Length: 125
Length: 164
Image (cartoon, rainbow over all chains, first blue to last red; front, side):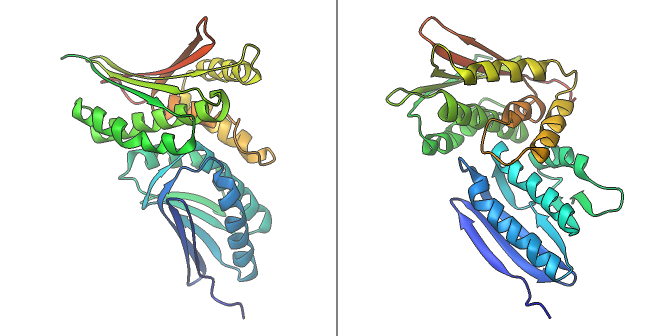
């Protein structure tokens, strides 16, 4: 049986915390993502999480609700993670706060990547 | 109401972009913009400054940021020096024209996201930041280059406009 997935990563003002729940790995994003090249930090972390979810047959949930700010460069590794999860057969969910207008606008645009079979979902809460 | 103005002169380094956040938000909130508007326009200033540091700034030179909050609109302008034959400037021009060609900036933003998804990963140059300024910041983009090779990029937000 796979080890429960958990971990913390931080770079600059951004931190990610992964917790294993039933059938899901939940990754909570906090702080601000405003690095010049956020992909350098985020791509390996997200890739590792997708692989862990694949091995343990879990859904990957990226929870952005507590996040204060992300620059446009941060969307690139997020979009790449969606693509990587889809290719690996890992269901992926992006959650955001509808109370934060910037998140409601930015993440509603990401609904373009949602799939009919529910393997990619973008949810406001 | 009088026009409120904030002028900042910044070194062309990444930490200066982050440091501009609080003065921008503070000035806009003091000028009567609501929390969502001041957040969105601070984001616009961050994206324009990031572009100036990445592509426009020449070492030893400074970047100029000005915010003007008027009764009808808000203008965020960033000024930085560019080369005479600057490939980035041409790419920038194409991206701005491309965004303007969309009736709804949401469509431009979504299209840029889709393009980003299928391209091999490369930092920068996606045009996503400019599309975000138009969509999320609800700003009209414009720019000019003066005789001294200073590129001035402006994003104009019309106050009291409707979403979409």
